[in-house]
Amino acid sequence: MQIVLVEDNPLMQQLFMIFLRGHGFDVTVAATGAAALTAPISLPALFLIDLRLPDCNGFELLKQLRARPELRYCPAIALSGLGESDRQEAFAAGFDRFLTKPTDLDELLLTIAELLGGVSQR
Image (cartoon, rainbow, N blue to C red; front, side, top):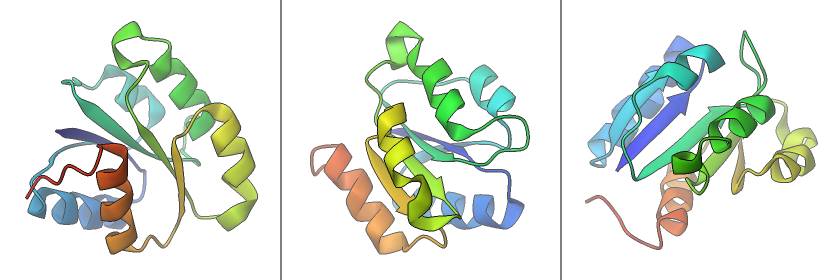
């Protein structure tokens, strides 16, 4: 399973990448929305998207990704450093789940497993 991590903070990128790869996921990292839109994405895939990116917001990025027929039903998790204030807008934009930063990694793993129907990579 490929996870496309869209996060501009290098420390957060490394943290998520090491954690997720350690649990058997193939992780593709994009630091901007533009990079995410040009990244090679193999299906099945899951998106983990920071809502505040240097070139766009995660709400608009998800809309652009989901406009592609092959990505229309890929699950997506919103990440927000602003806390609960983004929750409503994230769900309205089509995100399947919402997590705040700093993110509890156990909660992240449970959320991913839930979205994948309880399937764990390990």
